[in-house]
Image 1: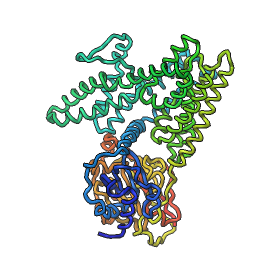
Image 2: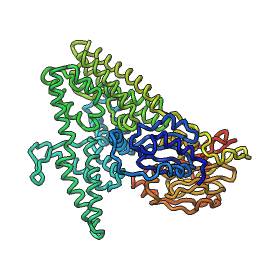
Image 3: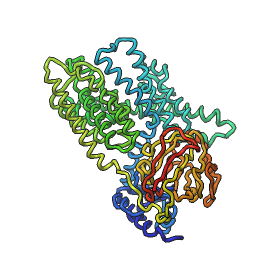
Image 4: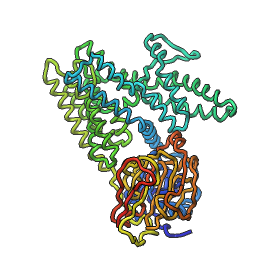
Length: 622
């Protein structure tokens, strides 16, 4: 075994907290993937500063140290240092905290594929609000009615969309998951809710809940489905699985969903609504602070639907409402501002675009795109939203800001606060300003910590650091048929932030990787999802098919070359089942990076868009 990376291996083990802090270690083509007992023991700053470490990522309960294409050599040096790693050590308190992080990752990953639909529907809602505000159309017109339900369809049938994405994430049937979403939204369910009579299933009471636009219930239901479906897949003979596995999965999961899992948010909402009534009696200003701070969390669990009606009750009894509306107003403004500021500080182009559009719609009172597309996945905008919303809510509560009619909670709803005393309007405007300014400052300050700057890899691979480049520039053709994207749009920061080198990414339309130049295969991962190439001109190229596809353990991939083989441009290197990978819940974005980019003056990509193997992808300059 080479001792080339022995010291680097020792340094990394020490900085992740020592061997006793490592539960398990695996590696993919470019990074070490640690399962740590206590992630807080890892010294991230010193790890990043190590010569030979390109970056550090702590995501979804897995601590990743980005090395480069020579990661296997570092991994080999670590094995004697770690010895036999046991699973028997009890989980620490910090590890338990990772469950919350994993829950957030699960929710955000379920939302990621449907963000375009949510964002588009949100923009339509915002447009309608503006058209009504400027009296272009009336909210009583048929035009408004039709376009409004076009936009509302995405939100109302959100459980269907989430059922599909969550099931793919949990590797259970998305079609059975959508069938269960259909149970929640069936017209007969709506009929039972309207009638309001007690309902029982096998003598078990079924709580009548409106699941339209809900989020948490369907995610919990799909988790239950995944266990029930997998159980019956194990115990039912193959000959009759196609009939009985779906039957038992829908029947049992459906009963559990309607009786126990689904109504959790409703029970919590009623309890919290009662709490709001009690708090208001003691401290009338407090509800605005609580709603201003916690509304994003309340929306995620559907609890806001139980608290919101308190405003209607208050309005009909005293003529004004300040339990829910003012807090919701400043929270929504905070959500919009956090998204807009994030769009300015993030380095990921797709997040810039989404943050801008989602921020605008949130200011109009439609926060779902900003909440699920920006705040929840990136976390720090959510923290900033809660800080700003709480600050604005405190002023709104202390000043007694109230609304005199019910409606949305965004900028178009400001006229709802015009009453006999004009100071009420001033108070809500001041509360909005406090919320916006506080959120903007908090978002920016938090971004300094959480938005990692691009890391330039110096000496990422010492074996090529001294190579002499003898050409002015090298043109590299596309190895993939598909849409070429900027590297910044890859949903993995090791690639998007340039930790592994400069390059591009592809969204494939065909499951094949071909040689982009004449050269040699210098690295082929055992699972065949990634390959390293060296051109005859000295350019090192890493092609990584999909994100986190190492977890497939080679399923759906086939290699047509082996390490050490000489290759010719256009030769087939890998084939993969594109649709099966997507159905398994994996992102198929394929980064292609020059891993020894530090040896060159520049690496520039060709025009983005649809490419094939005859098109130039990159030009490498001295």
